[in-house]
Amino acid sequence: MSRTFKIGERAVGGDNPCYIIVEVSCNHEGDFDEARRIIEEAAKAGADAAKIQTYTPSTMTGNFQNRAEGTMWSEIDLFKLYEKAQTPWEWHGDLLKVAEDNGIHLFSSPFDETAVDHLMQYDVPVFKIASFELVDTKLLEKVAATGKPIIISNGMTDYLELDEAVRTLRNHGVQDLAVLHCNSGYPASFDEANVNTVPVIGELFDVVPGISDHTIYADDRNYKAPMAHVTPLEAVKKGAKIIEVHLLLDREKARALNENDEGGFDWPFSREPAELKKMVDMIREYEDTGSVDYETQEEKIAAARTHGDVCFEPTPKELSSRSLRPCLWVVKDIAAGEILHFAPAGEGNIDSLRPAGGMPIRFADFIQGKHAKTDISAGQPLQWDMVNI
Image (cartoon, rainbow, N blue to C red):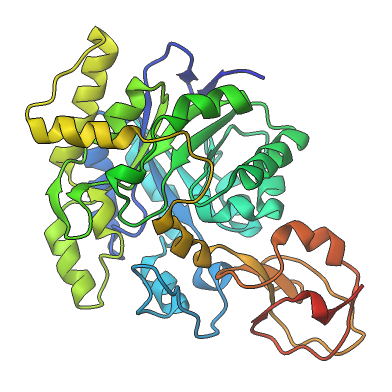
């Protein structure tokens, strides 16, 4: 397998400069002009790409009054969260034009198979699979079939789950693959960044290694001492060839929105434009000269904290995030004896949705065509005792 590949015209991996991705996520707050400005600021700071997310509330979760217990979003119903956080699909073409006009790539993370089909209309240069969806083997098979390069993040996974995801992609034809080491604590602590894992990922899986970073604060419990450049720079020193970070325009404004339950869902782990520019400049300086100096002793201490261990297990903060991963859900009432049919977007009676709590998606093909053991009401995770094996 190649440890170098192209995203559009841009070579990634090997001796090439680090490919820097800015995640827009929900930071547009439902305003197209805000999304446009984020992409423009990403380009001004020297990023290579901006990334959006492609889903609808109903393809992400059922309208079943579910919450993400133990996470920073535990106070809001998931369906309502994704209603507010989604990037409207009708924006995609215009946002691609914004990115093109600013000289950077734009692509997306699809969260179900219909999102992949939608993105293929725009001939996006690459697909990104988010950490939460890494256990969605049906989604992995779908993106593999596109023939596009794939970037995945390993947040919350253990080694066997990451290995399964890579094998699924490889077995379905993916040659050009990058794996981003990620801590899916929100916000993540410098102590749990474990950037020493980055080069090991590259070697073990024969992929382009990188990092998807959710650290901002040296004091992540109290949201104090922002040092948004530290973890990505230390990851590059360890061999990261792709960096992904979240960007917003005004963190305090987003924090206020979040405190009023009006938005700002990603504020604790999103950079502001000046922080992004500092990060990019320091990475490029390191690539050009082989060294770069921190300005303060506090930054040096924070940098040392990010190194950690080689870690292929969820960290303590990530264990709570695992509750947001998808599993198999019953999406239509099923009578005893009725055939189980997995299909996305409500086309079957079983689908992969958030949150966790039911049968892993790796068993979707196994249950396909099996019969329901009892009557099953829509709106609950599929369990083994519901299936006539």
